[in-house]
Length: 361
Image (cartoon, rainbow, N blue to C red; front, side):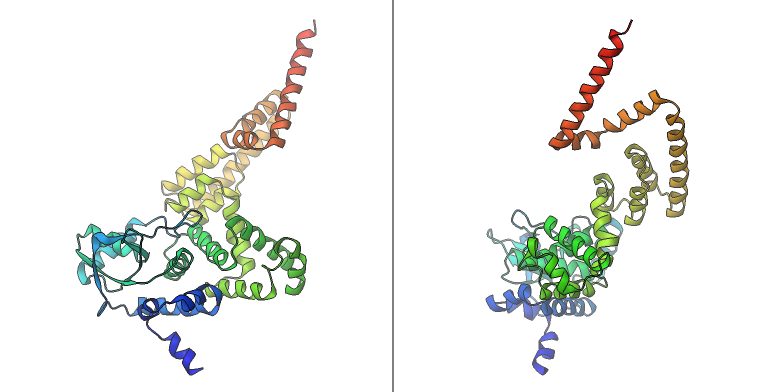
């Protein structure tokens, strides 16, 4: 027990310097390593020091480069936060070392600390402190994910993507497969009130050997590390992100709108062109309370218009046609063979109706 406690307190830069084949493997194979790594990163953040850490020329650093199929967890850097960090670095320098690995071209790929590197470049600093470690793509991404998650500087969409990626790495599941597995686990637990042994049995046909009792326990512990449960994550984040239109997701990722406001727009179920107008209003500074009121007004107006259309068949048909030919609907029709066949039948019926009308005297 004493040895385990001592290992947990080992400075993170020593851990990364000492990562060998066995220890690196544990970063993925042993669930408790996530908690240990999280604690070490938090300790380093609370009491950062670059004393005794090697300094490298700033031009040697590059963002983390991963093979196809693995993506960086951090895609957006909020300008105000970056400006605050830049001011801090200008006063006291970079006190917390970057975590890096050596690339094939001898460049230092940044696993943790890209914000510090970007700000330091803007300030024309010559060198940066860094801890170099030999990590493969999966290990580097796992550390980058945990580092970003514990700093709480990801927007909710990036955080959701990162948690999915982190769990996917541990169980060798792609994003889509894991997302569907988590949704199914949530439904089996909540809707059908199954215990974990029953959940594993129900999922055996699709995830045999992957979703085990031990795997469920590990997944639950990973969510707990970030103050979540599997059920709350699926209900409040994963499903919302999956259902959110791409234009709203991009606005959240780019920091133009808060996720909570984007979700209000998504839940409104208003036509896509109306949602786009709402998004522009929110980007212009519309408060959430005002957004909720605006949605209420628009839904009422839309309801009144639909009511009027029911007594006006030509108007109702025009509205249906407009929705059918919207960019999003047409894209789905073009990419789905079943929908395409239905559209062709609709076109045939319309042609038959026109012919019948023309044949009448």
